[in-house]
Length: 347
Length: 258
Image (cartoon, each protein chain N blue to C red):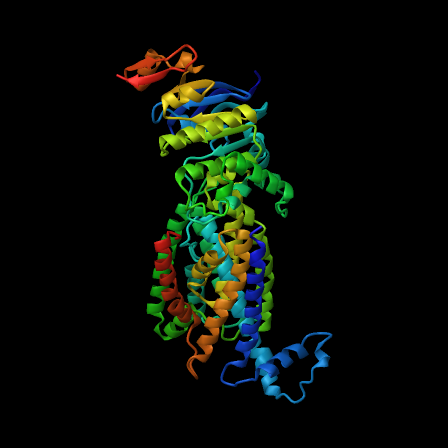
């Protein structure tokens, strides 16, 4: 009954996202007019493409739009979507609004893998990915697997134990990373910039490889919305409503960790998206995960797209790692929300 | 009358500590049964075993002649609804949405609630006088209101058994009466079997058809309030001396500590 009101808001968000995608393409060292951008993209769409005339547009502009900016912009949106939907799911499973996509050690696992890759000089590629990304992915998955099993007692998993195990394993890995950095000082800058996250050099192949599991995983997560709604009000209650709580927890943790590992391995560690976006959207759309998860996808895309656009255009000639931007803007904004909602007892 | 819950030789352990020892209990269909006992006597543990949140170490629990552990979660939720102590309200939900969650056991994975579910929710909320709270947030209503909302949610499960764990602790006397009156009405008019743990002996006496008196994981006594609530039984289980008062033959006994 109340749900219909949200449809307009969701539609508005989608239009904003689409506009931002097109608009951000025009920005950069080479300014490309909005109309030209739209024409270039339409010309690449099958069936209707031949109706637009792109002969007057410079080839270099077409190249910049199609091969440099568009894949990068779509990748930033995709990663934003993943991080945000994973954050929303974790917050539900841990019944803790402070949980983020990295609680299970995904980020430190990936960073450890990436650091290893960088100091071993593994720059060869598989499927458009540097070997570093592949090792980072493996590191992320192995770490979550480790944390999951440390927190498991028999057939049950305690979410508190996961949080604790996640913290301990993360700090162990961080020490490992620091050690590797000390012994390989010449790679320091590469390691640090990987860790801070970037979409520089995203390609269509990368995008394709990531978007398939991301789409399937996200849709799969949303099919558990009703279970998540029941679980956030208490696990015992949820089970007495007929939810198989233990199974649901496992399925969500495995799916969400896999998605987070995908995101981290292509983008590095980008904080705050998965924490603040679900929060912010919960304030607008409420806690019903049937709405929250889909809007998290759109909201995360919008936020990270804006941050990445700032990262690559704010200073000419230098690109700021996007992770810095997300915390620079996300941090104060989050504090503002926290302060505002403390007074309303919402958080 | 035919028992709807049938417990035989139930033993339950947390690690090594034996919490429930050889419990035998038949809950007749349509009865109002209260479980009394001092702190740590195993009241909540017994309830959690009945609703399949804990699993007996030995013995069996049958719900309508089926072993409780073998019943699918959703099917069990159509027979037994539980109102737990305390609710996390870290996340904000409208009261209406919370009550609607009670329809979960009737919905398939990709199914959304339909007209029939909305009708059931409305009825349950009217029966519990919570309909006017429907647009409020679950975190902004009072303890007594929240308890009624959770009972409304339990009703939408259309259960045969309603289990409540300390439904009136933390409530003032007006709400205590209100909640227990509501349970009694559901018990008499909807023929829902009510099983509840209580701390307040006089309330248990006033509302129950049967009282189970638990002592250190054993059933000390299970019978009508008149038979269970005697000076001797209470002194032996709680270790306090009481006077028993009955204003007339038709009224249930009340106790006053000496």
